[in-house]
Image 1 (cartoon, rainbow, N blue to C red):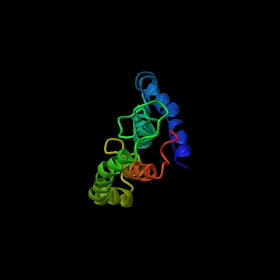
Image 2 (image 1 turned 135 degrees about the vertical axis):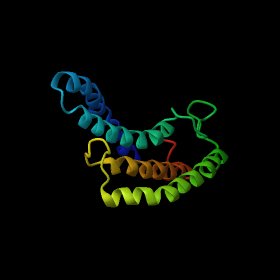
Image 3 (image 1 turned 90 degrees about the vertical axis):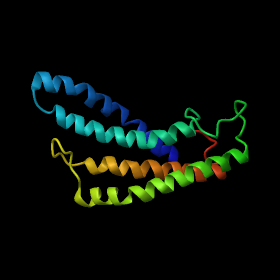
Image 4 (image 1 turned 60 degrees about the vertical axis):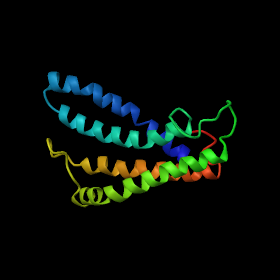
Length: 150
């Protein structure tokens, strides 16, 4: 499931790049829509990064305690426990302290302040997604679930 989620999130790069590229012609040529493109790009970027942190760790491309000493060697069990000991409190704390902010934003269906475009709540929801994925991946690494890469 984690592999599919990472693959699906990686596809967000294409519309993100398109929206970021479109801002200049929309602003200077069409003179409309550049702020809406920026709002959509911010949502896609937040969702992409929320999954990319875990995807990079799973692929051993991110700084992590799972990096093996020799290529192809499985991480030592103590490293998996150390990873969980570091990431679980951080993830749980982040989920706990952000709950009021994220819940209020979700309940109000918060909009972008400058354009009043709906969807700003998705950026705050991406914070929860990132913390939850990091926690789930750290727990999965204990049983060897993260050793297969992204």
